[in-house]
Image (cartoon, rainbow, N blue to C red; front, side, top):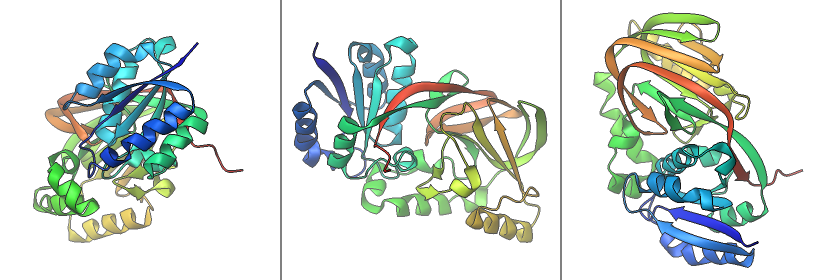
Length: 301
């Protein structure tokens, strides 16, 4: 029986470097005996619909693009019954690639392709936000709109600096949201300027393993809520905590839970894996334990 792979890539991710690497990547797959169907994405939403409609006919799905492309592909996989979901390999090609950093996937595209051919299987947790799936983070509040509001042209030219410059514009307009947060075992209430439900040790290209301590297949989210600072001194202390990753409970609430519910009086905008996820008054976030099988680089002994 032939081995069938669906290869979906975003030709516009990052600086479009995959266009120069495509021949070598496909050659790597062919030399390992795979029969390949190639799909360049045609716009926003195309990776999701194409994977949803076609992936069940393949043993392996390989995605290449940024975190947005990865999110679309995994949402497509998650729309299939579990036994019909193909294994998933990922070749990072975006600006930040938090997921790839978290999974120790090479930034070198050809090396990432080789690692997929020789990798180990890993069953990874996936999140559900009001029944909309995400890969590694759902977030609201300060700076969460930076990723999807930063023009692609600026990302291509400036990389991480583009996010920093776009984020700086928002400093005068940080807003606090009164919230009730219900999780497994308790309830928290207060005014929060930022909140995240995550399954990652990287965010915004920054390693935050000390703060998050995430296990990616344990069925639990790491939830961090940032309280509204009352004055400039508290703001400075809060920023210092972020730099050191020492999350002082005076400013931060840290929770681990399989399920969490956010309730507010006004609709709050959320991002899912850095893309706009909608504005809602109530959000129910569930952990789908070990829902997708990834092909990851072999661990060094």
